[in-house]
Length: 143
Image (cartoon, rainbow, N blue to C red; front, side, top):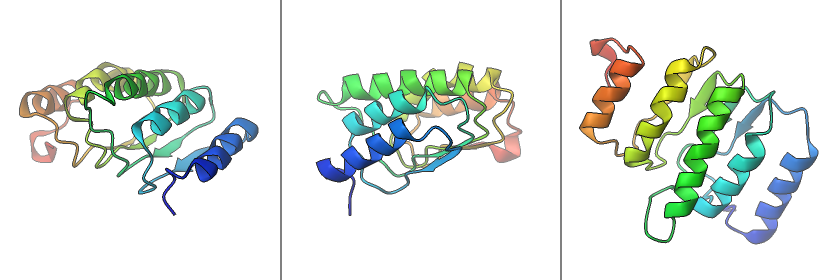
């Protein structure tokens, strides 16, 4: 069942608010809407124990209607990367596009991140180049 169902989404937010001990969240392929992802990210950024976050294949395409949610989501994601101990981050297929450039500095300064997945995000070539250089990715492993 897709999580754009209001009742299921409500259960998920209540779980995240009430549970203090989770270290991994995997919400891949759950059809979250941009406004729901943005609200969930605001909850997740408060958790210092989060080590593994998978939001892959939830669509964050920026349109006129979703722009504020996408920007707020990326801002919260930046905070999460900077403040938490996250070592695995999967954003595959989220269609973040050029918004990925706003994640470069936090990722470069994050000492914990071991696994980062950004494939299928329609990242423009100039941002891929900047990301590869900033993260010191060897040429044979370029995006």
